[in-house]
Image 1: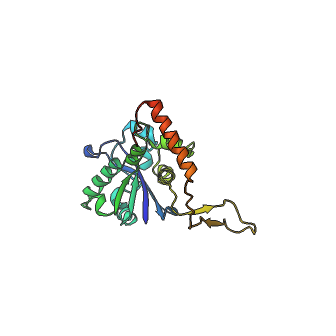
Image 2 (image 1 turned 60 degrees about the vertical axis):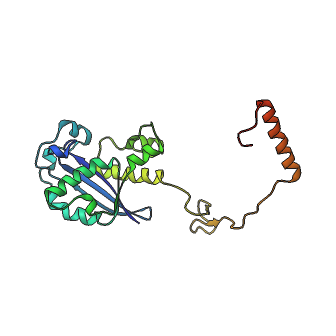
Image 3 (image 1 turned 120 degrees about the vertical axis):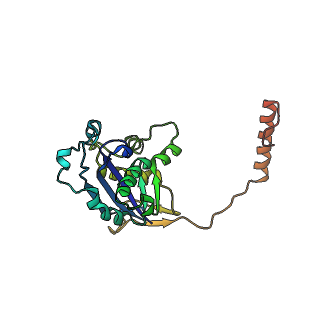
Length: 229
């Protein structure tokens, strides 16, 4: 399974009023492992940037003035995303901007180029209802260090999101025990399979009778039968 962790920075909050993408960062993950392959561009929006947005990401018109436009990097972005599951925190925001940029170039929309879009903010809200689920909050919850994140940056945020996504979706994928560390010969970590033949130990007659007596005592104390009776 090829997955792309994606984040963007923008001139403001609303692509429908002309705000544009000014940075995009993408990391490739295959079989839940980062491959080291990435895509990163600063982009000249050819317009002003909202002061509130500059306070968040620190990107200025002056810095971006010699960077390529979205049109100049669109083919590279599409090729990198092609056919992958794209993982985004608060996906409607980033996808809205990507759709607007692709629309200006008559290149369809994001969903035309990718296999599917996964929103980790929605996943986090389902897992932790009523709690803060920003990227910073999830880093804190999963003990992922983001001390170096003084400003938002698309590639840095994608790296943090990759760690958060793996932590959120981590599960036991096989019946194997990781012994940790090196083996006695200094080789790779040894893994041992759990036994596949499990012994079923039935309760004895005495244990069953003791259990029934305990349930009768509970019913007598409650002055009514147990709900499972």
